[in-house]
View 1 (tube, one colour):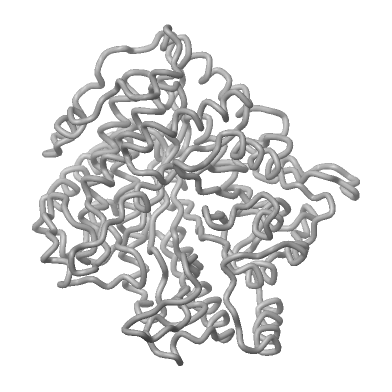
View 2 (cartoon, rainbow, N blue to C red):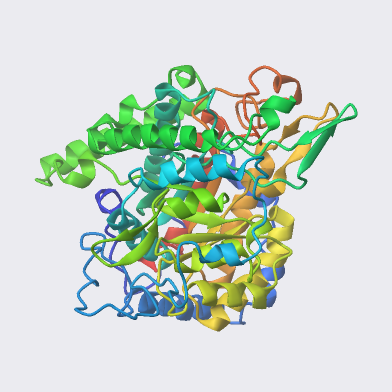
Length: 555
């Protein structure tokens, strides 16, 4: 547990332990029933060799070799160690893997940009963007490099990545308590995963910038009235009125201000003692005190407290900085390119450009055209970046895209985020993994179990059944174990609030309950109880995979 907390992977064993993992926490979860409903005889087996053990071992050996490649950014303690070249002028590739040839923060403007709002006044938009250009960066280049170091470690199989937060941040719901509660649930989930799975957890919040949303149509029609689609609070309002739906550049400034305030809170929570492991028993949310998940978490917290007491008795320093604070990073979909351009800044240490609106930026399915404006922007920023992929993605196309965004195959630069649904994932993820493995590319694999599992009720309300979300995560784990690759993380839309937006779970939210506390601005989110339940399920599954030598230091 101490190793997991201090982000140091456990040393490998000489032989693989093929027995089941020892019994962990006495948890009333139903993983075995869920796993029994799934088949390991999936399409993944078509790609596995007859000697599955040899396949897994060889692929893990390759991952270890890639993780210590000369250009790899793998030292979170010295993330700037690579920046020692005296003459950096004329370079084609940044140290973190960005492609710099003929690139500038505004070179995207020569390409077709999809999913951009239609503003009535260019002059008003330019004035707002000029104001943003004069404001300080929201994050810093060294922080992004630190994140890339940790993502490289996760891609090598030595950590797990947890993305979580709102589908779309809201101006109306912005309060310090809401930020704290979502942050607190992410801390709870991470300690559940660290304790049960025995590996470090890299924490990223869909926070401090996750406003803009891509839409299927530019216009929306209700009762014969047609207005612009709602694209997120940083662009227009969700009320179905002409005034609310008109894109307003001033909203970009308000989004920047809210992001800045959110980051101030997150930094204070992460470094000011709130995230100390000695406070693990105090992270429970009031409305979860009497719930099954709350009781389960209290038992885990008691075990963590006992572990800390034991470490202290052994002379292990509980005042280690990793026990008192935590790294917490922000992430969002870089959709509004004008806003992203103005927050792209030249790092004085490395003379390379970083997108300073968040530590991690990703590109969605609707905007990842190889010759499009978004890919042009992404190829030149030195941040770690994500690409959403689906069952419709072509293996050769994904390989080509990864190579264009990471020409020198630097670890930690690219995260592939699959969004498919459990059954489609079993069919299509193996061929995509095979394509990436055949090409020898360094990527981190992350599952988004939310977007492939949205359903609409008879009354027209969008929801997501918890059981389908769980099934996709478990299928993601199964496929990677079959393929001998590492299931690197999950990407969840969730909140610390006691909402009723996703059905199911031990909280037993029904379709009839949706109207009680349905607060989302866009898509349904897991509530705190559902998110924590999923963390326990993942922890149990990862712990068993670790016992089989498929995850972490037992490989």
